[in-house]
Length: 356
Image: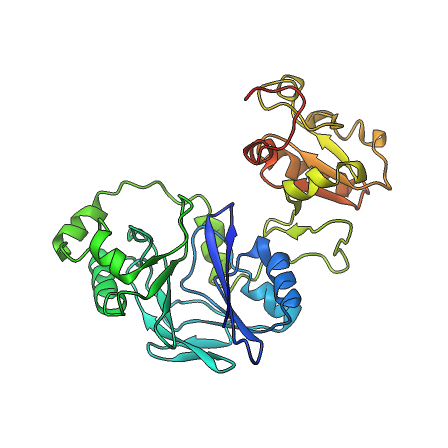
């Protein structure tokens, strides 16, 4: 079997690609909207035929790429019949299988984080994909989207922990850089759901987590209840080939810092921060042109309309708006630097000025 674990740094989401080696038929678990181009490229490079996208639940922290993959590649969408989502090609009941070539995944209902949470168990029980029902030394929260702590406790104990101790568990997220665990490990070491913990202990723990409201929930949940179909899709004919761009759910074309670092001479780097930020602690990218966002429309003619523009700011928010303004002004080869200078510095790329 072919297996790849993929990561979205913005939401700390794991996406999983599984394929039957002989037939090359594949499935993609929990695809992320902004990573659709990356995932499609990998599928093509490996010579695979993507048959299904599969959701572990209706996510609150990112938008799924399921609809996008169906529009572009004809991939079918599957998720739990209890999810409440519309627009899927198949709604799974507990115990049903998703087949890919000679391999298959069993859908096990593991509600509690949300009503439609599903864990997918590989045919030989060597792997299980738990979404947010069971994380590495943790679990998903239970205070929204029909969550229920008692239900989640029983889901994990009855559907996940009976798997072989050596079964490798792959979660929907991890915020510390961990990639996998096992049934045996979580039974012994999970501080919320380990074998020595009783249901009332778990309920008390989850009741007092005190977590903030998820930042993306008001956008992500409605979109995911449509299987990721946006209210406004990427405009027809606007696919850009000058860089490996991704199109965000908010309608912004983005480029990753690694590509920009290797291709600075091919683009115009437009920094839309204020002058004190440009020369401040984060520094600025070599060759960047400083044009504060408030002055952009008055100075747009200073840009070369034939050379691609990458807009930059501290976090990627103001520069995203800059790309919208530049497009209205008639420029077409425009992208936002994903994560802004914060991500550029986090990845240790060179700057002029700034402090460590």
